[in-house]
Amino acid sequence: MLKLRWTNLSGLVPLFLSQLTNLNFLDLSFNNLTGSITLELAKLTKLGALHLDRNKLIGTIPESFGAFIENDPDLYLSHNRLTGDIPKSLGYIKFTVIDFSRNQLTGDFSMFFWDK
Ligand SMILES: *[C@@H]1O[C@H](CO)[C@@H](O)[C@H](O)[C@H]1NC(C)=O
Image 1 (spheres, protein in one colour):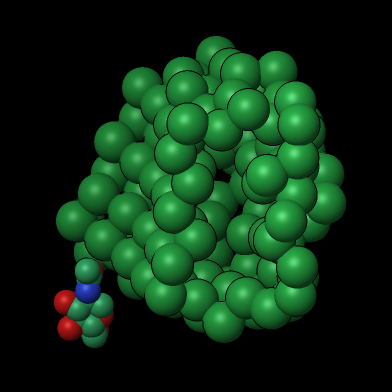
Image 2 (spheres, protein in one colour; image 1 turned 135 degrees about the vertical axis):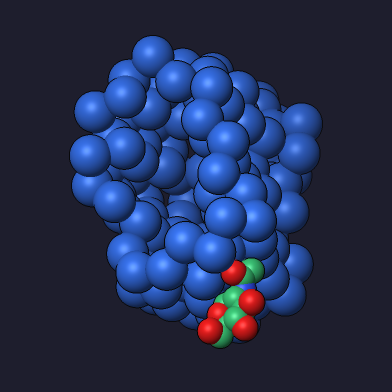
C-alpha cells in the first residue's frame, strides 16, 4: 500500500509507480499533480483502489485502464481537469466505486450500465 495524500506533491505522476506491481492500494489524492494520467498505471492489476482525485490532471482517462478488469478496483478520479470520452474498455469492469465527478468528461457513459 502506498498512501501519499496531502503531501504537496507536484509534477507528473511518476512512471516508476507502474513497476510496483504488488500494490493493492495507491493514494495520490489531494496533491498538485499535473500532466496526463500515466497509461502504465494499468499495470497495477492488483489494485483494490486507485485515488488520483483532487489534483490537476489533464488529458483523457487511459484506454489501458480496461486492464483493471482483473481486480475491479475502486476508481477515484474526481476533481481534476480530465477531458474527452470515458474509454469503453471500462465497461467490462465490475466496479463498486467510480468517482469521475468534477472533470470535463464528455460523451457516452452507458458502458457502466452494461450487463456483466
Ligand atoms: C497546490 O499548490 C498551491 C500553489 O503552490 C498551494 O497553495 C496548495 O497548498 C497546493 N495544494 C496541495 C493540496 O498540495
